[in-house]
Length: 365
Image 1 (cartoon, helix red, strand yellow):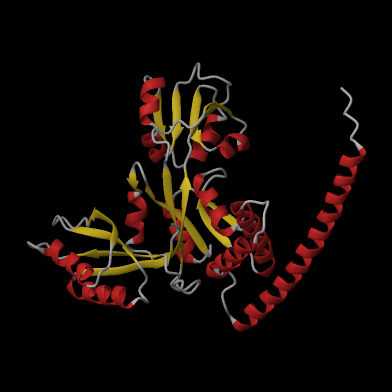
Image 2 (cartoon, rainbow, N blue to C red):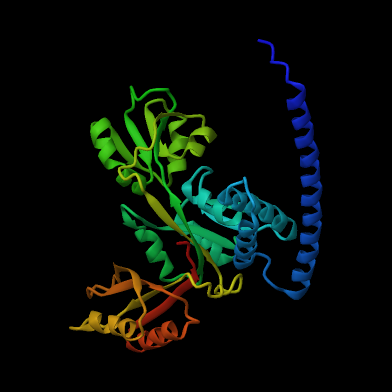
Protein backbone atom coordinates (compact mmCIF):
# COMPACT_ATOMS: atom_id res chain seq x y z
CA UNK A 1 0.00 0.00 0.00
CA UNK A 2 1.42 3.36 -1.03
CA UNK A 3 2.32 5.83 1.71
CA UNK A 4 -0.02 8.85 1.83
CA UNK A 5 1.44 12.01 0.32
CA UNK A 6 2.23 14.54 3.07
CA UNK A 7 0.72 18.01 2.75
CA UNK A 8 2.90 21.06 2.27
CA UNK A 9 2.08 22.24 5.80
CA UNK A 10 3.17 18.88 7.29
CA UNK A 11 6.40 18.85 5.26
CA UNK A 12 7.21 22.36 6.49
CA UNK A 13 6.71 21.28 10.12
CA UNK A 14 8.90 18.22 9.58
CA UNK A 15 11.64 20.45 8.16
CA UNK A 16 11.31 22.65 11.24
CA UNK A 17 11.65 19.63 13.54
CA UNK A 18 14.72 18.42 11.62
CA UNK A 19 16.32 21.84 12.04
CA UNK A 20 15.53 21.90 15.78
CA UNK A 21 16.96 18.39 16.17
CA UNK A 22 20.24 19.51 14.63
CA UNK A 23 20.34 22.49 17.00
CA UNK A 24 19.62 20.23 19.97
CA UNK A 25 22.38 17.85 18.92
CA UNK A 26 24.84 20.73 18.63
CA UNK A 27 23.89 22.03 22.08
CA UNK A 28 24.12 18.57 23.62
CA UNK A 29 27.62 18.11 22.25
CA UNK A 30 28.58 21.55 23.58
CA UNK A 31 27.34 20.42 26.99
CA UNK A 32 29.29 17.16 26.66
CA UNK A 33 32.53 19.05 25.93
CA UNK A 34 32.03 21.15 29.08
CA UNK A 35 31.34 17.95 31.03
CA UNK A 36 34.66 16.54 29.81
CA UNK A 37 36.41 19.62 31.20
CA UNK A 38 34.58 19.14 34.51
CA UNK A 39 35.82 15.55 34.53
CA UNK A 40 39.43 16.66 34.08
CA UNK A 41 39.14 19.04 37.05
CA UNK A 42 37.51 16.37 39.23
CA UNK A 43 40.25 13.90 38.28
CA UNK A 44 42.97 16.39 39.19
CA UNK A 45 41.29 17.32 42.49
CA UNK A 46 40.31 13.76 43.39
CA UNK A 47 36.65 14.65 43.90
CA UNK A 48 33.76 12.21 43.18
CA UNK A 49 32.54 12.05 39.59
CA UNK A 50 28.98 10.96 40.39
CA UNK A 51 27.08 13.38 42.62
CA UNK A 52 23.40 12.37 42.95
CA UNK A 53 22.69 15.54 44.94
CA UNK A 54 24.00 17.60 42.00
CA UNK A 55 21.89 15.54 39.58
CA UNK A 56 18.81 16.19 41.73
CA UNK A 57 19.56 19.94 41.92
CA UNK A 58 19.92 20.25 38.13
CA UNK A 59 16.75 18.27 37.46
CA UNK A 60 14.76 20.25 40.05
CA UNK A 61 15.87 23.52 38.41
CA UNK A 62 14.93 22.26 34.96
CA UNK A 63 11.54 21.05 36.16
CA UNK A 64 10.87 24.42 37.80
CA UNK A 65 11.88 26.29 34.65
CA UNK A 66 9.85 24.09 32.31
CA UNK A 67 7.17 26.22 30.57
CA UNK A 68 5.49 23.20 28.90
CA UNK A 69 3.91 21.62 26.97
CA UNK A 70 6.33 18.80 27.96
CA UNK A 71 5.32 17.18 31.25
CA UNK A 72 7.65 17.76 34.20
CA UNK A 73 8.29 14.04 34.72
CA UNK A 74 9.24 13.63 31.05
CA UNK A 75 11.61 16.58 31.24
CA UNK A 76 13.20 15.02 34.33
CA UNK A 77 13.68 11.69 32.54
CA UNK A 78 15.25 13.40 29.52
CA UNK A 79 17.69 15.38 31.66
CA UNK A 80 18.66 12.33 33.71
CA UNK A 81 19.70 10.59 30.49
CA UNK A 82 21.57 13.68 29.27
CA UNK A 83 23.50 13.87 32.53
CA UNK A 84 24.16 10.12 32.50
CA UNK A 85 25.59 10.33 28.98
CA UNK A 86 27.80 13.28 29.93
CA UNK A 87 28.99 11.51 33.10
CA UNK A 88 29.98 8.51 30.98
CA UNK A 89 32.42 10.84 29.17
CA UNK A 90 33.88 11.99 32.49
CA UNK A 91 34.08 8.56 34.12
CA UNK A 92 31.74 5.61 33.36
CA UNK A 93 30.07 4.36 36.55
CA UNK A 94 30.24 0.58 37.05
CA UNK A 95 27.07 -0.56 38.82
CA UNK A 96 26.47 -4.12 40.04
CA UNK A 97 22.89 -5.38 39.60
CA UNK A 98 21.02 -8.66 39.77
CA UNK A 99 21.07 -10.19 36.29
CA UNK A 100 20.61 -11.22 33.63
CA UNK A 101 19.35 -8.29 31.55
CA UNK A 102 15.70 -7.47 32.08
CA UNK A 103 15.44 -7.59 35.89
CA UNK A 104 13.63 -4.99 37.96
CA UNK A 105 16.97 -4.44 39.71
CA UNK A 106 18.43 -3.40 36.36
CA UNK A 107 15.45 -1.08 35.84
CA UNK A 108 16.06 0.53 39.25
CA UNK A 109 19.73 1.08 38.38
CA UNK A 110 18.84 2.76 35.09
CA UNK A 111 16.30 4.98 36.83
CA UNK A 112 18.93 6.12 39.35
CA UNK A 113 22.11 6.28 37.23
CA UNK A 114 20.68 6.69 33.71
CA UNK A 115 21.06 4.46 30.70
CA UNK A 116 24.76 5.23 30.17
CA UNK A 117 25.86 3.45 33.37
CA UNK A 118 28.14 0.43 32.88
CA UNK A 119 26.04 -2.34 34.43
CA UNK A 120 27.71 -5.43 35.93
CA UNK A 121 25.25 -8.34 35.97
CA UNK A 122 25.42 -10.65 39.00
CA UNK A 123 23.74 -13.96 39.74
CA UNK A 124 22.64 -13.06 43.29
CA UNK A 125 22.48 -10.20 45.77
CA UNK A 126 25.43 -11.87 47.52
CA UNK A 127 27.46 -11.26 44.37
CA UNK A 128 26.20 -7.66 44.11
CA UNK A 129 27.44 -6.96 47.64
CA UNK A 130 30.76 -8.70 46.95
CA UNK A 131 31.35 -6.83 43.68
CA UNK A 132 30.66 -3.50 45.37
CA UNK A 133 32.68 -4.24 48.52
CA UNK A 134 35.66 -5.50 46.50
CA UNK A 135 35.69 -2.43 44.28
CA UNK A 136 35.04 -4.28 41.01
CA UNK A 137 31.88 -2.15 40.84
CA UNK A 138 31.64 1.38 42.22
CA UNK A 139 27.99 0.99 43.19
CA UNK A 140 25.49 -1.79 43.74
CA UNK A 141 21.69 -1.99 43.62
CA UNK A 142 19.85 -4.47 45.85
CA UNK A 143 16.19 -5.05 46.66
CA UNK A 144 15.33 -4.40 50.31
CA UNK A 145 11.54 -4.32 50.69
CA UNK A 146 8.31 -5.07 48.86
CA UNK A 147 5.00 -3.49 49.89
CA UNK A 148 3.11 -6.79 49.82
CA UNK A 149 5.74 -9.40 50.76
CA UNK A 150 7.86 -7.36 53.19
CA UNK A 151 11.64 -7.24 53.45
CA UNK A 152 14.14 -9.10 51.29
CA UNK A 153 15.69 -11.01 54.17
CA UNK A 154 18.88 -11.97 52.35
CA UNK A 155 19.69 -8.31 51.71
CA UNK A 156 19.20 -7.49 55.40
CA UNK A 157 21.55 -10.31 56.41
CA UNK A 158 24.19 -9.15 53.92
CA UNK A 159 24.04 -5.55 55.21
CA UNK A 160 25.16 -6.77 58.61
CA UNK A 161 28.77 -7.49 57.68
CA UNK A 162 29.40 -5.42 54.56
CA UNK A 163 31.69 -2.37 54.56
CA UNK A 164 29.27 -0.71 52.11
CA UNK A 165 26.70 1.88 53.13
CA UNK A 166 23.43 3.07 51.60
CA UNK A 167 23.56 6.37 49.69
CA UNK A 168 20.21 6.34 47.90
CA UNK A 169 17.04 4.44 47.12
CA UNK A 170 14.68 3.81 44.23
CA UNK A 171 11.04 2.81 44.59
CA UNK A 172 9.64 0.97 41.57
CA UNK A 173 6.05 0.13 40.73
CA UNK A 174 6.30 -3.60 39.98
CA UNK A 175 4.02 -5.16 37.38
CA UNK A 176 4.50 -8.88 36.82
CA UNK A 177 3.44 -10.32 33.47
CA UNK A 178 3.06 -14.00 32.64
CA UNK A 179 5.15 -14.74 29.55
CA UNK A 180 6.03 -17.83 27.57
CA UNK A 181 7.32 -19.02 24.22
CA UNK A 182 3.84 -19.82 22.86
CA UNK A 183 1.08 -17.17 22.52
CA UNK A 184 -1.29 -18.85 25.02
CA UNK A 185 -1.33 -20.39 28.51
CA UNK A 186 -2.22 -23.84 27.17
CA UNK A 187 0.49 -26.40 27.88
CA UNK A 188 2.25 -24.50 30.67
CA UNK A 189 3.70 -27.00 33.13
CA UNK A 190 5.91 -24.74 35.28
CA UNK A 191 6.16 -21.04 36.17
CA UNK A 192 9.72 -19.85 36.83
CA UNK A 193 10.42 -16.66 38.79
CA UNK A 194 12.18 -15.14 41.77
CA UNK A 195 10.60 -16.32 45.06
CA UNK A 196 9.35 -12.80 45.82
CA UNK A 197 7.57 -12.63 42.44
CA UNK A 198 5.96 -16.03 42.97
CA UNK A 199 4.70 -14.86 46.36
CA UNK A 200 3.40 -11.57 44.95
CA UNK A 201 1.38 -13.46 42.31
CA UNK A 202 0.27 -16.49 44.30
CA UNK A 203 -3.43 -15.51 44.36
CA UNK A 204 -3.57 -15.17 40.57
CA UNK A 205 -1.59 -18.38 40.08
CA UNK A 206 -3.88 -20.27 42.49
CA UNK A 207 -6.90 -19.18 40.46
CA UNK A 208 -5.62 -19.49 36.89
CA UNK A 209 -2.82 -22.08 37.05
CA UNK A 210 -3.59 -24.06 40.23
CA UNK A 211 -1.93 -27.32 39.14
CA UNK A 212 1.18 -25.80 37.56
CA UNK A 213 4.55 -26.18 39.28
CA UNK A 214 6.09 -23.00 40.69
CA UNK A 215 9.86 -23.04 40.41
CA UNK A 216 12.06 -20.48 42.18
CA UNK A 217 15.05 -19.13 40.26
CA UNK A 218 17.65 -16.44 40.97
CA UNK A 219 15.75 -13.63 39.19
CA UNK A 220 12.69 -13.02 37.03
CA UNK A 221 14.93 -12.34 34.05
CA UNK A 222 16.63 -15.69 34.57
CA UNK A 223 13.18 -17.26 34.57
CA UNK A 224 12.42 -15.51 31.28
CA UNK A 225 15.71 -16.70 29.80
CA UNK A 226 14.90 -20.29 30.76
CA UNK A 227 11.29 -20.02 29.54
CA UNK A 228 12.62 -19.07 26.12
CA UNK A 229 14.24 -22.53 25.92
CA UNK A 230 11.16 -24.62 26.73
CA UNK A 231 7.59 -24.11 25.44
CA UNK A 232 6.10 -25.75 28.56
CA UNK A 233 7.72 -23.20 30.89
CA UNK A 234 6.41 -19.72 31.66
CA UNK A 235 7.99 -16.80 33.52
CA UNK A 236 6.92 -13.79 35.55
CA UNK A 237 8.55 -10.46 34.79
CA UNK A 238 8.64 -7.12 33.05
CA UNK A 239 7.64 -6.22 29.51
CA UNK A 240 11.32 -5.48 28.85
CA UNK A 241 12.21 -9.07 29.77
CA UNK A 242 9.60 -10.42 27.36
CA UNK A 243 11.07 -8.33 24.55
CA UNK A 244 14.67 -9.25 25.36
CA UNK A 245 13.98 -12.99 25.38
CA UNK A 246 11.40 -13.10 22.60
CA UNK A 247 8.46 -14.21 24.73
CA UNK A 248 4.72 -13.63 24.37
CA UNK A 249 2.92 -11.90 27.24
CA UNK A 250 -0.13 -14.11 27.77
CA UNK A 251 -1.43 -12.29 30.88
CA UNK A 252 -0.68 -8.72 31.92
CA UNK A 253 -0.18 -7.41 35.48
CA UNK A 254 -0.86 -10.66 37.36
CA UNK A 255 0.45 -9.41 40.74
CA UNK A 256 -2.14 -9.72 43.49
CA UNK A 257 -1.80 -6.08 44.60
CA UNK A 258 -2.29 -3.37 41.99
CA UNK A 259 -0.09 -0.92 43.92
CA UNK A 260 2.90 -3.24 44.23
CA UNK A 261 6.14 -1.35 44.87
CA UNK A 262 9.66 -2.53 45.69
CA UNK A 263 12.41 -0.45 47.33
CA UNK A 264 15.95 -0.83 46.04
CA UNK A 265 18.97 0.44 47.95
CA UNK A 266 21.98 2.07 46.26
CA UNK A 267 25.15 0.91 48.03
CA UNK A 268 28.84 1.78 47.78
CA UNK A 269 32.02 1.96 49.83
CA UNK A 270 32.37 5.13 51.95
CA UNK A 271 35.50 6.09 50.01
CA UNK A 272 33.53 5.95 46.76
CA UNK A 273 30.85 8.28 48.08
CA UNK A 274 30.41 9.78 51.52
CA UNK A 275 27.05 10.14 53.24
CA UNK A 276 24.92 12.49 51.10
CA UNK A 277 24.13 15.87 52.69
CA UNK A 278 20.74 16.48 54.25
CA UNK A 279 17.96 17.45 51.87
CA UNK A 280 15.04 17.79 54.30
CA UNK A 281 13.54 14.51 53.02
CA UNK A 282 15.97 11.92 54.36
CA UNK A 283 16.10 8.46 55.89
CA UNK A 284 18.70 7.13 58.32
CA UNK A 285 19.05 3.34 58.39
CA UNK A 286 20.78 1.35 61.11
CA UNK A 287 21.01 -2.14 62.58
CA UNK A 288 21.25 -2.71 66.33
CA UNK A 289 20.95 -5.42 68.94
CA UNK A 290 20.06 -5.05 72.60
CA UNK A 291 20.77 -7.30 75.59
CA UNK A 292 18.22 -10.09 75.99
CA UNK A 293 16.55 -8.81 79.17
CA UNK A 294 13.10 -7.50 80.18
CA UNK A 295 12.44 -3.95 78.98
CA UNK A 296 15.31 -3.90 76.48
CA UNK A 297 13.01 -3.13 73.54
CA UNK A 298 11.35 -0.33 75.49
CA UNK A 299 14.76 1.17 76.27
CA UNK A 300 15.56 1.12 72.55
CA UNK A 301 12.56 3.32 71.77
CA UNK A 302 13.00 5.85 74.58
CA UNK A 303 15.79 7.94 72.89
CA UNK A 304 13.64 8.27 69.77
CA UNK A 305 10.66 9.53 71.73
CA UNK A 306 12.80 11.82 73.90
CA UNK A 307 14.31 13.58 70.88
CA UNK A 308 11.21 13.52 68.65
CA UNK A 309 12.59 11.18 66.00
CA UNK A 310 10.05 9.14 64.04
CA UNK A 311 10.79 5.47 63.32
CA UNK A 312 9.42 4.53 59.90
CA UNK A 313 10.47 0.86 59.83
CA UNK A 314 11.44 -1.84 62.31
CA UNK A 315 12.41 -5.36 61.24
CA UNK A 316 14.00 -8.15 63.27
CA UNK A 317 16.34 -10.91 62.11
CA UNK A 318 17.77 -13.75 64.22
CA UNK A 319 21.38 -13.23 65.26
CA UNK A 320 22.09 -16.98 64.83
CA UNK A 321 24.00 -17.16 68.09
CA UNK A 322 21.89 -19.98 69.50
CA UNK A 323 20.73 -17.65 72.29
CA UNK A 324 17.49 -16.34 70.70
CA UNK A 325 19.13 -12.96 70.13
CA UNK A 326 17.95 -10.65 67.37
CA UNK A 327 19.23 -7.82 65.23
CA UNK A 328 16.81 -4.95 64.67
CA UNK A 329 16.85 -3.03 61.39
CA UNK A 330 15.52 0.48 61.87
CA UNK A 331 14.70 3.34 59.50
CA UNK A 332 14.47 6.80 61.04
CA UNK A 333 12.91 9.92 59.55
CA UNK A 334 15.72 12.48 59.29
CA UNK A 335 19.48 12.90 58.82
CA UNK A 336 22.36 12.49 61.32
CA UNK A 337 23.33 16.13 60.76
CA UNK A 338 20.06 17.19 62.45
CA UNK A 339 20.68 17.84 66.18
CA UNK A 340 17.72 15.77 67.41
CA UNK A 341 18.64 12.78 65.20
CA UNK A 342 22.31 13.02 66.25
CA UNK A 343 21.32 13.09 69.94
CA UNK A 344 19.03 10.06 69.55
CA UNK A 345 21.74 8.10 67.71
CA UNK A 346 24.31 8.94 70.41
CA UNK A 347 22.02 7.59 73.13
CA UNK A 348 21.25 4.48 71.12
CA UNK A 349 24.96 3.73 70.78
CA UNK A 350 25.28 3.78 74.56
CA UNK A 351 22.51 1.26 75.25
CA UNK A 352 22.95 -1.12 72.30
CA UNK A 353 25.11 -4.24 72.46
CA UNK A 354 25.66 -3.80 68.70
CA UNK A 355 25.20 -0.63 66.65
CA UNK A 356 25.90 -0.05 62.96
CA UNK A 357 24.87 2.81 60.72
CA UNK A 358 23.78 1.48 57.34
CA UNK A 359 23.46 4.90 55.73
CA UNK A 360 21.63 8.20 55.49
CA UNK A 361 20.16 9.18 52.15
CA UNK A 362 17.42 11.24 50.45
CA UNK A 363 14.03 9.66 49.85
CA UNK A 364 11.23 10.59 47.49
CA UNK A 365 7.82 11.49 48.89
